[in-house]
Image (cartoon, rainbow, N blue to C red; front, side, top):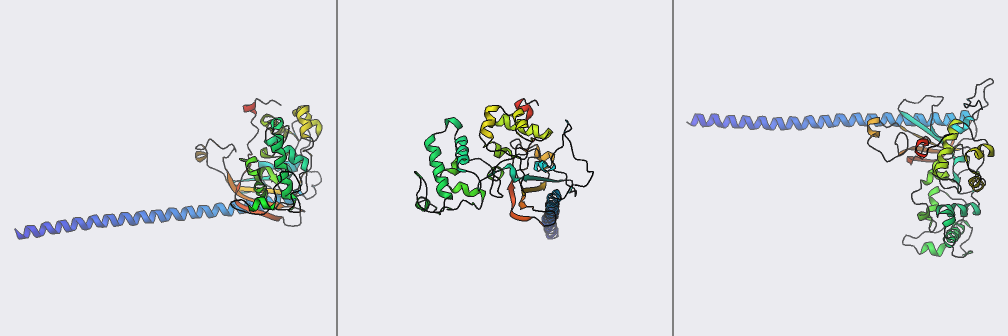
Length: 353
């Protein structure tokens, strides 16, 4: 009897030992599997980072090469009508195939700042028109427009004197819950600084500021060949349908002057727009590079309108002055917000060219 009890105890001990060893082995296997996955993901992230940095350098080289004299006898790209296309206009946010090939899964987009509104060079009259457009155009409240314009003037003037009616100087900003002082200089340091001006955070609510505005360079006009959707949406005389028409037109051929603009923009709208636009390019660019989103992941997001559904990417703002000097880097943002760079939405608006 005692022997049977001892045998039963041994069996129980053996079973519990087996259970404990099974649990221990399972836990160790899970930990090893998790560690292996971590190593794989870290390696993938490192590879992506290296490829993105490589693409950024290749994009800088592309911009430097753009300033080199064209080789004799080089065949330039032409439109369907046989007209020469300006190579510099490809820096309008379209996905680029660079001279130095990047990894297949890396997307590179370059945005010429000639396609943005320059806050450091915008005339007072144009700022007023910009404010009026954001407030509803002809339906804008004149008093509200003047209040915002006065706040802008006081932010960019060189003193703390309330020189205009309903302005906002140092005393106003120091009285806020989180106080600060106005710039008192017409040269803003960042695009986002305008949101600190009284009333402007509400005025530009929902606007991708980096896509619409710039503070670099000396250009006062916007080149429609490289203009971002966000910048065009702020301009007087343009609505969404006209913006898509402009994008559809420039996908086929260059907008070289008033004649081409008159083909796609009604006369009344063109009158409002004419003081804003020109044909110049700049030497300031935003470069975006990022891994392409896999199709399966992209199908889960129906809200974003960029063709590859990427919202944020590594971004550099650079100035390229010549082909024999490295670009000057003004800003780096590992999580820069991409402008809306989708192809023209011709079907949505029933556009025919």
